[in-house]
Length: 67
Image (tube, rainbow, N blue to C red):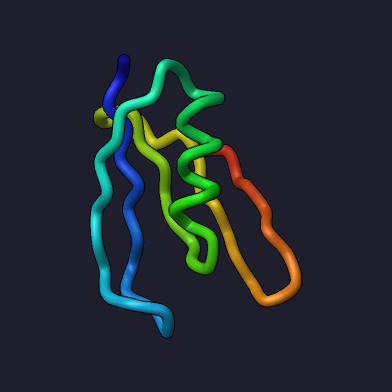
């Protein structure tokens, strides 16, 4: 399994933090990331490679792929 990191910035929901977890692939990592970032925006990383940003607002969730 690969190690992924979910990076949260400080916001109205909490302090900045990093959450490392293992998942079999990117799809599995996204499932975990969505669950862990239920109320906050966060960046999903695989090592030094930024995969995407999960953006949360009151009314919607979006994923922006890293370029």
